[in-house]
Image (cartoon, rainbow, N blue to C red; front, side, top):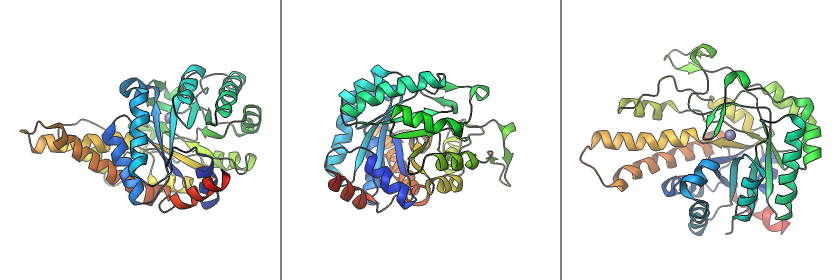
Length: 332
Ligand SMILES: [Zn+2]
């Protein structure tokens, strides 16, 4: 099966009240852990690479790793550029085999964001590649994207129609209180539950609803949507790590979002935590091990476990691969 775009995935996800997981990839074991879990559960997925991932692994390796996954898995997979900072980065991904790109003009004023996004959309659509853009700005850190809490701002619903109409963009990332990284909120922004775990402020579903009303049938994207699963944080901290007060978005809120116009949920930090937990746990238990397969393998196994959990209990995309493939074939 060749790489596919996201149009049909989002159409089915929108109508069916589920979301497609967009998982960040950097190396072979991450690609394998994600795609093996998705194939087992017959879920369509998006694999995405940031500029940092392309720098680390090189474009050709990423593209061929994802193509290798397609050789062994019978599910629709899209390859997406996460946070393209400029036209040139997006163009090089369009030319380099990606089926979807994000142009992140959220740091620019509204009109400049429109101009930049439109330029990318015009080029990408000529090459049959879909485009995601962003309005509003998330706090947090993800690779080269760093936004301080006081500079972040929610998406303004009264801007979304003009933005989508003027750019022709295919999907839109909005800021409703999610945040990049494993330390999404400061302790003073949160309350603590009975176990002493930080509980962050509720996502702004009122903004999401306003956006939905203004953009009927239009796919919305959530970035910074890892839940920072405490099981992996605990394994890391019990085995020499020091992730104090790591906090993410509660999964019941993400599940609620997946049932709405949100069609794509980005997950990166949770993958990093799962991989690190597997590696730390093995290295601490078996200090004599020096075969990388013996400790990266358990990291890959935790990624598999994590992605299966997300697909079943957060995204709701299990057993949806066939309906997406049917629509792709019908649209050919
Ligand atoms: Zn992001």
